[in-house]
Length: 288
Image (cartoon, rainbow, N blue to C red):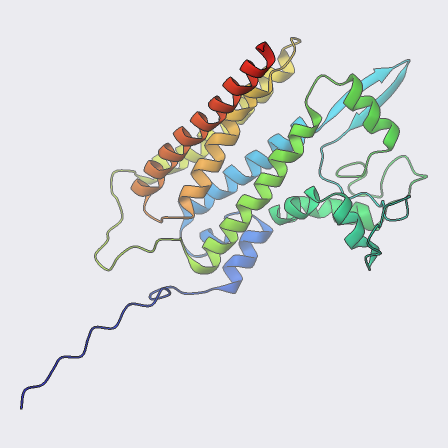
């Protein structure tokens, strides 16, 4: 009697995938730390440099100092959570506890929070905020402290930078770190096949150099901003965003450096083309 071979079972979507809570927690605290703990050191360094570069750059864009009639107004970054629940219409849905209403009124912080320890001073400032004090308590003082309404109005009106652009960068940094946390928890989106081998064309020093280049790009741009008295154009801030988003997104999809860098290049070109198209449309609308 002949036997009929059983049909081959379809591989599970989670075949070969391992889930680890501790690395995920570490990557929440400090982006990339979970990957370093797992032995994926270069990838962890890439995540650390990219996420913090975007976050710090956004904090810089969201800062400003102006002097009006002898009074100096200063904002240190845009990562803060104001207590607005007691204001008129500050809690339209009667949310409990009031913190939910405050996050509803400033949803940016819900994204910024995921950057990890770097956003915790804002929580400290929120819990210890005294509207009658000029500074917050030690050790953070005014760092990530909610600025007063008068200060916000003065810096936004008289400042020379696009303050609101800064929180976009810090929010994207937090969202990117959610992807980094998942990579530490469950690995990249596409696991290598059973016969895949790491790509040998990119030695460790090239991988570290890629991460260092991202930070250098941001530092050069900040230096140009500080040194120049000319009006600033927001489009010159986009390369930092494009490079960081492309690298982090690609590194959460693959573990091999060949696919990571190739995918990053493709996404960098896509983002550049998309943003260039938007710029052309805006220019045409302005001309018409």
